[in-house]
Amino acid sequence: MLDKNKHLVFINIYVLIIISCLMLSCNPRKCLKNLSVSDQFILNIADFENYCILYNQSLLKDEKSFNEFLNLNFYDGLYYEHGYVITTIVDSIGEEILTNWIQNSKLDSVKLKLYLMGGHDLRPKKYKFVEHRYPLIFKD
Image (cartoon, rainbow, N blue to C red; front, side, top):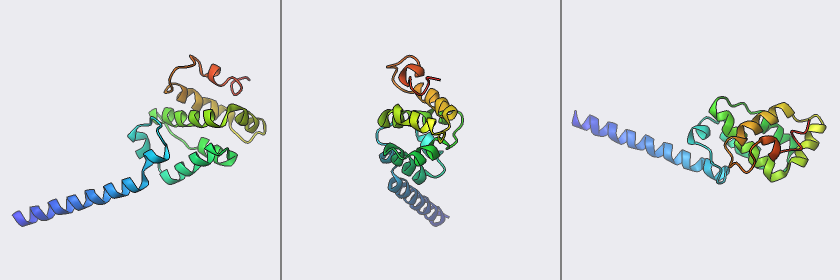
């Protein structure tokens, strides 16, 4: 009986080591730089590799990637965190670029505004209202 318990302990340790190695190889914190997102958010991203690719391509002003990134669906509190990540992209590439994309009708302005409102709630409050932070996007 004691040998069987030792065997189970070694199997559990082995499984934990494997899981740890897999988690470290993905390194989601590296992908999202120093953004303040929860572990729950990271764990709920179905295809994290794709999320990172779309995030990084969006930062490089790739309209198609940003549109795909914007159309990822998150619910409840995760919606706010995805919105927060979107606000960091908008701040990085500038809202002028996004207004051009919206005017070309290739970007869902309603979804963008909803994510920006959710993400604004998690940002430091330099601006009281999201409309003041992104006046060009919320102009209409």
